[in-house]
Image 1 (tube, rainbow, N blue to C red):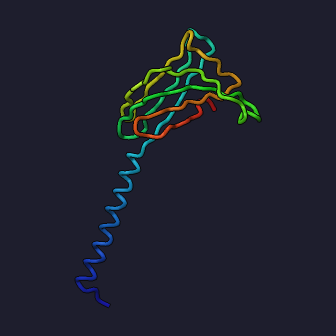
Image 2: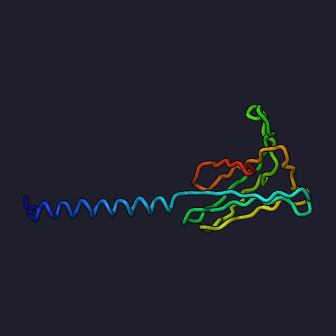
Image 3: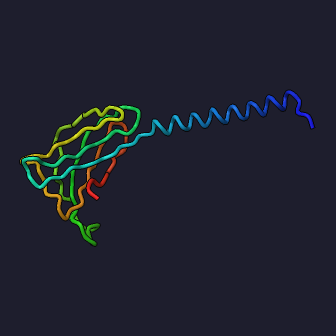
Length: 138
């Protein structure tokens, strides 16, 4: 049972192309569009609430528009209407978020909102991407 040169080269080529395909898939996975959110809520409107939008991908993203809204907590909250808390109104944000970085939005004084007994959501519109809706407080 000997392997001739053409069989050896075809086996080597198959293994090499499989390794290269694995490396390409890993590279694409690392460049995948990922966004994270976090929050710091405070009862005092002097200190305000903070919502952070993190870019977890390896390319910068452009945040065009953002809406923060709430839905009351409870069993029938699915049927409740959305109560808009904050939006930039008729403006476009155009906030660039660098790779592996975050943009923090402060809601103080008249922008401060009550978060108790509510589910807080944020709707993010990114340039060239679909709309992402994330729940802020768990």
